[in-house]
Length: 54
Image (cartoon, rainbow, N blue to C red):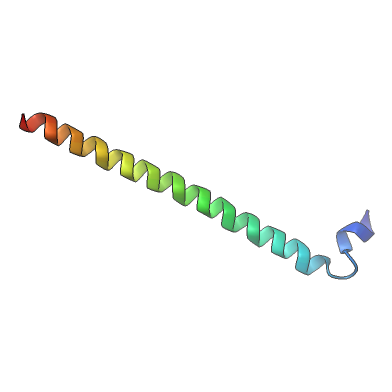
């Protein structure tokens, strides 16, 4: 098990790459969710404004 985690003395590079990739993917998902909420709120506001004009 220890040899597998060490990956031939390159474990620190491999696991840090996996960790960094995971952080970037999580950040992308969070950014996408926040952008979706923002656009949804904007569309809802525009629809309400259009309904109040008529």
